[in-house]
Length: 200
Ligand SMILES: [Fe+2]
Image (cartoon, rainbow, N blue to C red; front, top):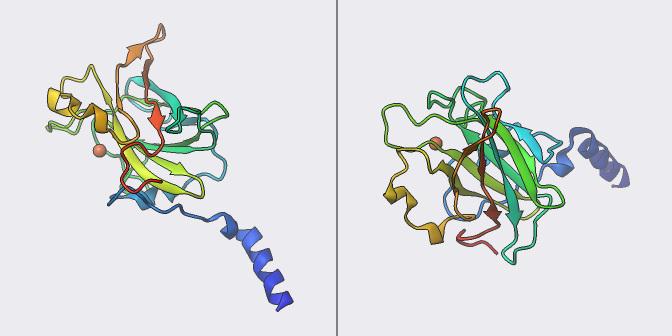
C-alpha cells in the first residue's frame, strides 16, 4: 500500500493533478462556467492581457479592486474576462468564449488590471458593448458577475441601467476615460458574492 501511495503522489506531482481543483459553481445556472478553467495559466499575476497588443481596435485598460462584503481588500482572487473583438465577434478560440480572454489574480491590495481593446457590440444587434467577467475564489467557488458596460455606449439604454442595487459582484457599468496616449480606462470594482444566490 505504501508503494501505491508513493506512486500516486509522484504521479500527482508530475501532472499537477493535485492542484486541479475546479471550484464549484454557485449563483445558479451559468452557461460556460466550466470554460473559465480551460487553458487557465498556472501562474497568474495581477496584470494580464486579454487582446494581444497588435489586436485591431481602441486600446482599453480595465482595472479595479476586489473587496469582501466588509470592505476589506481581497487578495489572491482570480478575475476571468472574455469579450468580442472590435467587430463584435467572439473570434475563434479553444472554447466558445473565443480567443480574447484573460485571467488576473488580485494583489495584496485587491487590485487587478487587464489590458485589451474596446469590445464591439454584436453586429446589427441592440446589445451594448460588454466584457464578460467571472470570479474564481480559490478553494471556494466560481460564479459570473455583471458584465463591464460603458456609459458612453449609445446602446446602453435606461433599461440596462436599471437595477443598480442588485448587480452581481457590484455594478459593472463604468465611465471610460481616455488618457493622453488615447488609451481608454474604465474601472470595474468587485464585491465578492454580492447578489450571487447561494453564496456564503
Ligand atoms: Fe457576450
